[in-house]
Amino acid sequence: MSNLKFSILPLQEKALTPFVKRMSYIENETKEPQLHPIPPLDTMGLTFFFGDLMRNVYNGKNEPLQKRAYVLGITTKGGVSIVHQGTVKQIFIEFTPTGFYRLFHKEGSNFTNHPPADFSTIGAQILEKELENCTRDIKSIQEVFETYLLSMIPTALPEIPLIDEVVKLMQTDVVGKRSIEDICEKVGVHQKYLFRLFKKVIGISPKKYYRTLQWNTIMNIINQNEEKSLTKLALECGFYDHPSFTKEFKKFMQISPSEFINGDVSLTEMVLKYNS
Image (cartoon, rainbow, N blue to C red; front, side, top):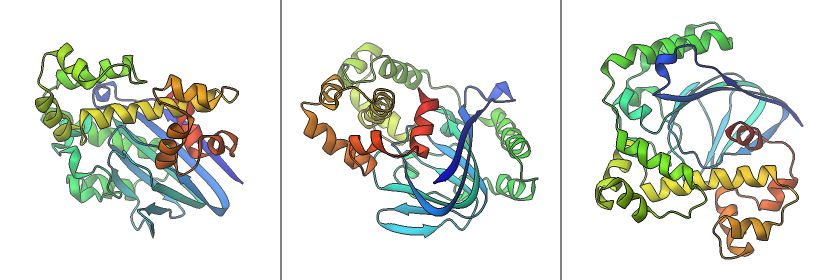
């Protein structure tokens, strides 16, 4: 068993709102190693953790995280987990769909489905040094993050309203009744152009981004409807039957939907709670 806490940290610098989706704080205390599967992520992020070291499990490799500051890319497939043991405290910055690209001028595809990347990949060694040297408390770490990101706004790339419009359309019908073809027709762009733009800015294709949004919604529904039939749930979410739904779910979460529903409270469930 562990003592797991998850909370949202309100942004102090409101000028960051167009770039930062949210900032969260995660704390875990456990005597035994705990494996937390990471659900598909639909956003780029920065993280800094302190306390005991963590381990990253990726593509069958179990490796310690040698540093404490990392860039986290979008994840569209399963097989990514974090191992917590001891006392670990973590600040996680999630960017809006275009926020990371606009601030750091780095294409999202460089980080998609990759292990955590060093801050040197985005030229943020100064930020890493400031985080390492600041007081190890939530308020101080949040202030360092926000001050640094705020300093980057003057050199930020222009807004990309097309992506914002497309993401909004996806979110209005997140279980998948709308096709990418319909969305392109609605916004008046060719599919190939939208594909190139999404790959460059966000790091994945519009179809994969849409699917990632859908999976987070599906897991939210599961997390909030323990009594609902999984077969009914599968049909509501656009799957042909229960087996196809279960197979797809296992690819992402490494466990079945029923195991997810009946399992102990995990990091995934707590994150989903705040996503709903």
